[in-house]
Image 1 (tube, rainbow, N blue to C red):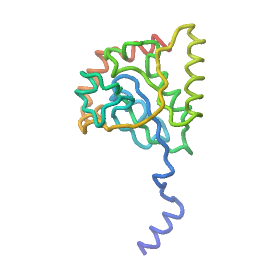
Image 2: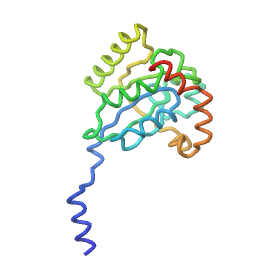
Image 3: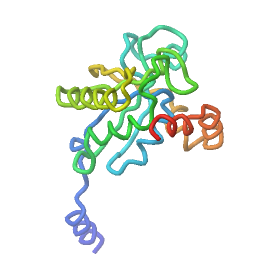
Image 4: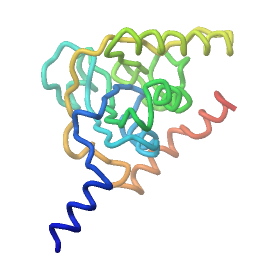
Length: 189
């Protein structure tokens, strides 16, 4: 009987195979914050904090933050492309960052906190460039967000993964002290 019920359930609700998922990569300052806003998007399966864009293999948080590795704090977004697309993810990303700050994001300054859109193919590159051009025209202002070809992603240390959930009070204190919400309202009104 159990086998019959399980078989019927799987026919009605076939499991998605990981190969059906896609991945996108974004940097927007603190990866804890980036994880938080992507985790709310319908169709996002998983977010992973990490490092991308640099020349050091398997970097550590200390190396990325305090040395010149070329990496930025980034988030790997695993998503179901039948429910959400790259353009929508990009739209979510852009309204959650300050696209005009060349020095970093909010209270996090330095090369490792720059905002970057990573593209994995020419279509994503075109979508990213068009989005940044639209923002330039809307605000009549130079955009600092970078568009880089994706090469490799290194997962951050375990204690960074889902930090905003595991350390909720500490995370809220950090986010509040950075005035992220207030700055976003000022920028995007």
